[in-house]
Image 1 (cartoon, helix red, strand yellow):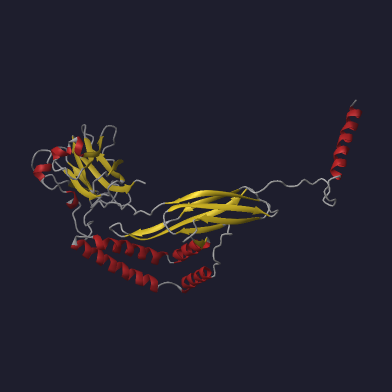
Image 2 (tube, rainbow, N blue to C red; image 1 turned 45 degrees about the vertical axis):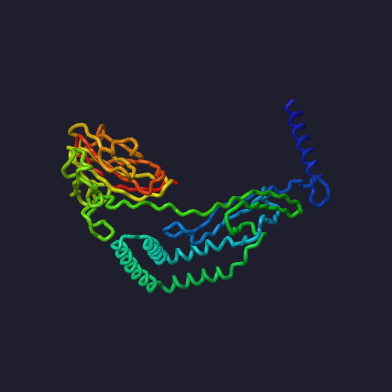
Length: 400
């Protein structure tokens, strides 16, 4: 029986070999099937629009640029790409390698670019600054940075200058982008809807087309990050190098804002005496201290952009002798007293933390998210009760 099975095995194997021998690339039309698979085109798009506005939110310029990259299901057959944009008037094409080479130049000149960016940021603020003392301080800062910039340019090595020259030569030699490029950048003339079609053709002449509507949105100003003065309660941290860490946190009126109805409300300062490599505080060497009697408060009005959403973060710490709590609130700018600060109508957002489960004098980070609504400014207000408490390292970001 085993002998017969062995023979059958080899008969089947021989049959497969015989069939395979009939398939030969040397014999036309024998064993070959025509490839009916045509291309299935697709493309990805990335918005790389850039713009600049002045401090009054007036648009200075906008570049509505989108990076397009074509693809298809064909991995072997050669393909040709053909883009079409409707409407095409005013659309310009940019070689995909141009931004890469420009970024390479910036990398070579990293120190110079960083200093120039810092100067640009400060000069952006000056025209809209109404405080003469701040203008003077900003202009002095620009002058100091300009000196550093001049020195940085003068110290550029011959190697760096040659690398930059080589990159600039590569930019000059870039071929113009065409509608047949697999990847390119479209620069649109302005906001609107554009139909972008891609036709892919393989080396057998088969083709297919896909298209999408690309919506180019109007450029809008970047929402500025509000400034919190003396955010970490450090000495000499005001714009002009002065301040005792508390100056920006004083209430407009002690009598109106005192939780006790009168007396001083100025926060105290707690100084970290630990070495630099083992600090107790989240930032710097000073924190705001609120005695256990609850008589001291922190108050600061900051500018915000109407309609924007913000995240305010800060750190708190407590003593553990008895129950205590700390409340940080965001108030409407029309709030004019401690009593009004307790009214729900004046509270945009609020957070109360207690010392339950906390470790004595160990700081913990908190966050408050709030909407500016129609307000152009809001008040950060902090008050405590029960035990001595501390606050430190306020920060604010725009929620995207």
